[in-house]
Image (tube, rainbow, N blue to C red; front, side, top):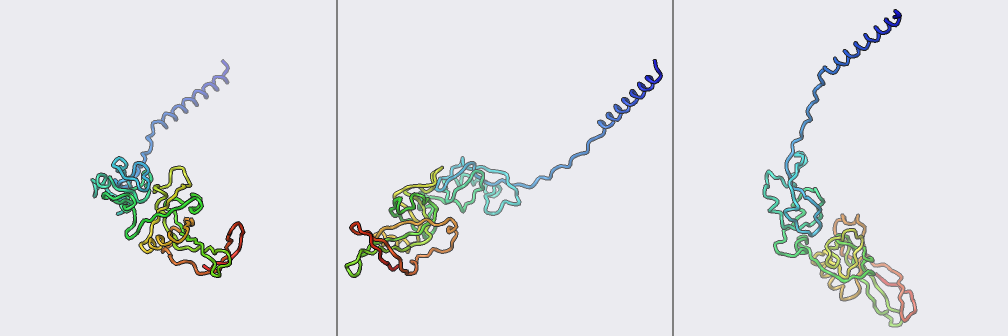
Length: 264
């Protein structure tokens, strides 16, 4: 055999042996130990299993205990350590606001009916619920939904003082920024619907506002004007009518349109 071939073969075998040794040495080296992940302290709080709508009774099967970071479990959450029987105590309450699945239960969003109806249970202290007739024309085409805010507008027709001209139509805002409790008997928006056509709107009013609305129903036509959602946080509810101003109104009488100026 050629000496050169013997030398090349010897070198190749030596290199293979060295590589195998190095690989074996690497496998035998112990892997560095991973540091354990620190576990945050938790507590068990009461949450919902599924969505609970406005006005829906809360059942025991709608609730469950769930681990929650102790650092974020405030005093307004229900802790199992302090209220182990909370599920039985809360069952039968009515939701004053909607709950989403997995949301912590807050007692401020619940109310005990104690045999009363839903509407009486969700009304804030000192408030009244009063209904008024509406139509698609006087109810923003059905786009007013429960929990929306509206202005109540009174429109009435009066005879011209001189007895010769056309009738005068007067309109004024008699109640402002009023919360709608229900349309007909629906206290919440129907699933998948963005409009709700009804014949009756139930409004949340103070006693003096209820008197104003009751009087207005006997004197003219009431319309609801939908307000922006940003008005829901507005403080106070003004009952004072807008400042008087002149406004041109088209009055149709016997098929003839006339324009007159009404003072508001």
